[in-house]
Image (cartoon, rainbow over all chains, first blue to last red; front, side):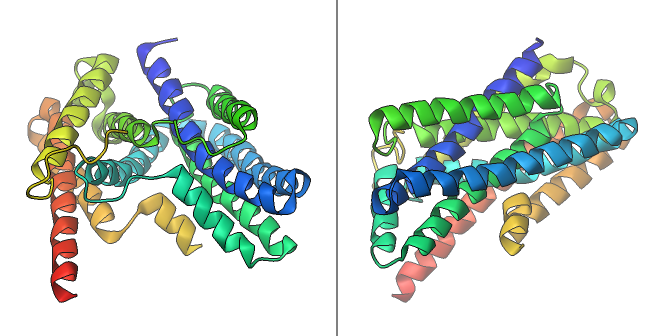
Length: 247
Length: 66
């Protein structure tokens, strides 16, 4: 595998893990209310929809392989839209301007919401939670599947799902120790790097825009990571001495 | 559906930031092709800084209003 493929696979694995951890927290809260059997059936139903979407788009992308330049540019632009959003959010968390994502709080809020819900409503909450987090994974697989093979990208997302389920079932509690905010920041930098590389590479030609080739991805990643920390440091509230996110 | 669109594209400042950065980088590529990528990266970092600061200002205005 090339450096770009390793980067793509790692970014996809970590980004998916972040989404699966959030989904697991919701399913766990529901399971403690309506039982593991029904909560699991909701999770499986949500995952089935995501798997179907991944399969359908995989076939579509393969059919459109002749327009690879355009596909590359379109995927790059999509990654920029997705990555910039994550990047700004992560910067604000580091600056202490946005609350850190807290799985324990998310768990408590979902439990509170479930107290007044009926069994069927609880099932829907688990289904929607898995589906919404899974949709983000689907988007990432479509986008980053281009660096690896589509199958390898889907496999990477599936591997992270298995890792989160194994860890979650073993602990039977919200995965609060996962450094979710740090992971999101690193993944945002990786997504922006790939997005920049493909978007402008697809529009004007990769060798023209990036004379250093794949190695540029590492430089882009370093630039985004360093700049993000500087922006976070500069936009910290006055009087704040500690980092917003130790995550 | 709106949730899915929001998931894909983000909010208006996000879409505008990416669009402007790409347009400028594309324009630069017509004159200095090798600099287009660097310009794109710089503009995106600038956009992130502006978005982060704008959000800070909005939050400060809200807290003054209360």
